[in-house]
Image (cartoon, rainbow, N blue to C red; front, side):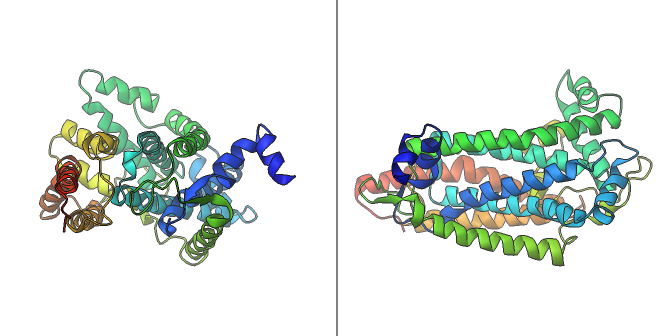
Length: 383
């Protein structure tokens, strides 16, 4: 009876095909649970964000005090704010793990889910940046000033573009209002894109650790993997509760707990930790326009992977696995360098690590894919 309802009802059948009876390879590990975890993270961020929006005032003279009012005066407001702020960090942590798993196991071979996923990532970055501005602390104000000024590097229309984004001749009330509006809107676009991502995955089928076709060895998503995802949900809840209740300020910036002052520039302006790798790449290029191009390219390069490299993952390719872990170390190094002052020797090291970041995507991955095809054709095994 229940199964017939799941299959015949026009609405429930869609959910059933995506989350219940979805044919799934039988050999997936816990690394494939990050997709479900990201859906949960998005839901938590939307729910807490809606309640925070009920008390937030998008006005330059009231924004900082309204954020403090939520923390100090609103019933359980501190829980909402800390879960929302730290939830964003956990969200990006899981995104990077999800992308890392896709790189390691060659998930970018599935064109539609991968490209939609990269678009989701780009929209997440924009949404998080808009949200970082809303508390209207010192770091919020100067971060939006510095980042939006990068648009002035665009030839011919750069200055006009900056004024258009600001809504005036400087960061002002109009800027805060439009950032608040878009920060409220974009998560719902993310929900729509997430469903497109799922539908694309449903059409082409999920990958697996071996990289081989698995049509003959599949199981229903529920209960086989819903139980695994439930375990991941509990781990996520534990991490988020530890951060929100025991270390609520650990991932924040002290300067952002001072109200924005256009007359006082912080000694060291830097974004949240999950943007530091891109910030390091931006600062590594001495030319302003070149830095902006490198910054955008550090994300957009992911869209090129399905066309540059086609292989089944590094599970059996020792050389590719070594290069992958060197790349992971490079990513961590860039994140560390992005949080340091823009001075020598950090800038020089940033330039080296930035070059390797792009070399990995544009040269090493295609080379490894070519070597893999050659080895399979020749009947050899890559060590």
